[in-house]
Length: 638
Image (cartoon, rainbow, N blue to C red; front, side, top):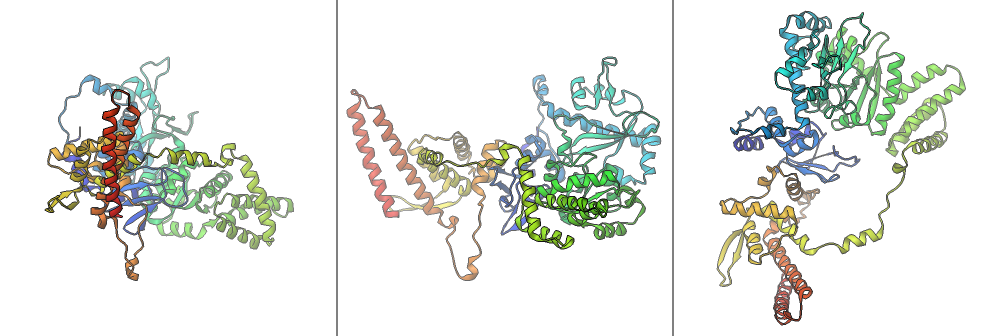
């Protein structure tokens, strides 16, 4: 178990904007950063990161919290896994509290955690075979050297080799204490009926580990080196609980910083394309790993940039793949350019035979926007056939139809109009036809518009509990301004000082208020326990807890979705909330007291019987008088 000292060090060292910046393209917005939500589709950025408070809030999905909770959300990390990942990034040594785990606790490890662990063990095994084993060096390392890869690049991408012996890794893992079930579920080992002890899936192949965004090994790609064997050239890990090939881009972990820095992603097809470009010094590149590009993969890129240049082979298959990718990228609002390499070349071979500057200039100069690219390819096929030419133009207009931004659509159509000497009106008409076709092809639920009914709104308004609203505000004030010192006066007019937490907790205990929300109960219990320990527990304390609901609630309290413009430069000044804390706390406390009295009065009215009626009526009269005094006090405040 990670020691509290280490946890405190992690939270004091990590920077939320740096961790989130690896997953989301952030832009400065006043003292905060803003970006598109990685959890919810949106066109206007509502994802806010506050460096000063070290928290984030996604207003489109409602999620929020610290850098650690972000890692838990985006990577499906457990709390300890997120802490370890952050510690590794910042070079913090993990100290463990020495705790003896029972057999039951050891078995409580989730299958997901074991899958990550066995992939890590396998990855280390394959690398060790490549560098230390004679067979690995003679066959595997020699192959990579023939592909002109340097040692540092081989190590950067953690390339490895699986030996010829059919159960080398399976036997190794079982001896390490891993069970057959997890080896089988990982897909690294296979257990056929005729070999119940198991065999290695990737034997006698060079290994390309496939990493998650954060660098965890999810699966493997493996290339066979023998040419006379009747089997697939490349073999990939099967789908597992942690590996879904449609959700992964090869090289993204190694390339994400360069993509964000360059504000451009180069999209290629294969593992070696990525690796060779990296070796040449071009690092903002990822691969779809030989599979058709998916919406999920595009969204991974969009976290970092909206600009994509597709680098595909100049053969028919490459061109077909680029056509499919173009329409998908346009649908997701990406800006696209396409580069086709000369016949016989792909990004791997081109990068190996040419210096970096030449490759960079080639990509820059040869990149065409999707209209010019499709026009060049399709018109070459159409030659002088007017029907084929019309079909080619229709295909280009169809692609424009995938663009959601109306202004971009108009610019593209003007470009098509100029290029083919056609009227804009005829192109807009064709665009309308293509949009209808695309819309009809969509699932019915996507075409239906959600209508918010008035009755639902009315029902929501009627169910609002004013006491709960005020309770929420009291908790928010304690989270935001808990240690803020208020100046108060006794009935004898003596001045004394009290913190926001102490005043609000004093009010809740004085009136023996029942807390409505379970989350608020937890927060208030923590605050009360802190007071007993002579500690004021406000926002920063709750951001370090493992309770996701509490962390999200704290982020809600601490992050403001809007910031006032800098009106001071125009000599226009507004009061800020922190300047009015004294009055706000007093006002909310007294309003909460009033609503609590009303609740007690209503409860008494419902409980009146003949036996207790006189006592109940007397209490109701006294409480009503107290409520009236509070009303007078509120009127004076206003």
